[in-house]
Structure formats: C-alpha cells, structure tokens
Image (cartoon, rainbow, N blue to C red):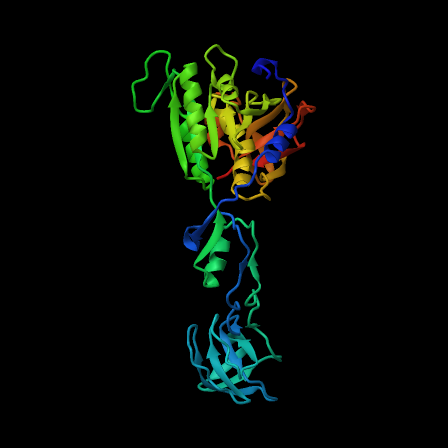
Length: 400
C-alpha cells in the first residue's frame, strides 16, 4: 500500500473515467408518488394506461364542421373543454368549439375562427378547407399500452406533467443515496460563534449540503471530526457504514495533522486514485469501502467545490441510476488573453454570456467569492498554456 506522498498524479481524463467505472448504479427500488418524483430515475418502463389525447381533440378555437360542397353552414351548438355531450352534425352543420375540446364524431374538420364569417347561426367559410384539419387524432402523443417513458429516464417537470396527464399516480424509481458529509480540522468554528485567533469559520459542509440539495439530493447528514487519528479512524468507519456515499472535507493533504488518507486506508478502503494533475483540487482521494464510494476533498473551499461539480455530481447521478448522465459542457469564445502557469490542467471560474466567456479575477483555491459570481468553469488542458482573445475554449456549465 503506497503512502500518499508517493502516489503519482493522474490526468483529469483518467480520474473522470475511474470514477465512472467504479460507481455501481443503485439497484434499490421504491414506489413514489409522481408529484414527489422530481429528479428520481425510473427503475421500470412506464406504459400508457390510456390514449393521449383520449379523444379527437380540437387544436384551436374555431368551428367543427361536417363538410359539404357549399361554403355556408348552420351553427347548431357549442362544445367547450370538458363537455361530455356529443352533438350530432348533419352535412352542412357546425358547432362552436374551443382548444382542447372533444371534436364530435360527426365532425370531420375544424376551421379557425379567424377564417370564417358568422352572422347569428349562419357561418360562411372564407377559404378552401379540407378534412381533418386542426384535429389532434386519438392517441397522437401515445397510444394505450405503448411505452410512455423508458427505464432510466430522469424525471423532470415535463416528465412529471406527462405522467400525470396519463393518469399515472405513482412510479417505481431507484432510491436516492444517503450521503454523509464529514468535516475535519481543529481550526474550524461554526458560523455565529466568536472567531478567536487562529480559527476560521467552517463553510464547506454547508456549501456541499446546499449543493447537494440544489441537485436533488436531500438525504444528507453532517459530522465534524477532530484532528485526532484514533477519532478519525473510528468515526470514518462508522459514518461510511451508515451511508451510500461519503464526502470528506479536509485532512487529505500530507501535513502532520492530515489524518484522513491514512485512516481510510487502515479501515480497508480501496484507494482508486489520489492526486489529480489539476488546479485547483490536486489532493483528491477517491476510493471504495464495501462498494461504497468515498471522496476526500481538499479543505480549500474553491478546490472542494470544483471537485464536487466535476467528479462527485456525475458519481451521484450514476449511483442514482442515471447512467446516461454527462456534465453539461460547451464551447465559448474567450474575450481576453490568458496565460496558464504550470503544467497542470485548470478549471477556471468564469462568466459566460452570449457565447463569450470572461475568466474572472481571484482564482485562488481558497477563494469562494469568485465562485459565487461564476456560472461556468473554463477547462484548460495540461498541454496548452497560451490563449488569446477569440480562441475557442471548453466550458462546463455550473448548476444554477
């Protein structure tokens, strides 16, 4: 077993692939009401119990006609959305109809109200019309018994609306993981307490917890561990046993009081990688204990948050059954010159608007202020150092 300071750095691409290859999607299924299913992933195919629409439906406000060879029609009634009666139209007759209403079986077209002239109960057609215009056919969206949404679909607001429109009340989904957040460091003080010399306010747990909540993960517990090896050892083993994934903040570097890496290895955690050739966030540990993924993130807030978005988020999606998830990447035009120092890949906090991207001031791994105003990260690979205004760069969109 290698000591941490002997482990070579791996590339960003290698790290990303290792995370993907070592996360086993959760197979635990649960039934959930559709109203409460936002962000969950379907664990079974969903088939439509009805035709949608369940009747021939008017696509607009106008008049439903039973066509004949003249341009004049007699209006015999009205059909509103939700009406259950079925007027019988003879040839040359019409009914007033509204968007979403059921088209009578004896009507064979719908004409827009702007294309007719109405005087009392008499209607005149202003243009040539043909059959089946402005009528949504029975089962146009999906037919009864057909596949509505397939297994592995992540449920969005639109998907929930679609399922409810089919009358589906509950669905089978993959259960979301329980996540343990661990903070380490004797220098940390809770917000609201007096800040004495040598102490700093602890922010990473709240930052990570709110980040998880924004991504739809709410089963989160937070624990604080003192910088003591035996305490770290016992606490980590217990926390990992109770959760499906653990995120540790701090204690992963090579200082005399950074105990996390050594403790993880002693309790039997399989180290998959430690140290990524990137800035910020080089000291990133990823491993598994009893198949449960463990990330030990740097203590510096910006480093921790970068690694959270780049590695932890995809891992969580995959763990939740969303095996087709990919980071929201894109390209943009750089609006100023930039020189990258060193030979590590970098994730630079930036602002993207109208296809152009501005790299922000204050890229230190300890600084969150710039992150608070950024909406993308600009990715600069190891082998490119000089950028000029107008260059195309890769960006990673940050969740809103």
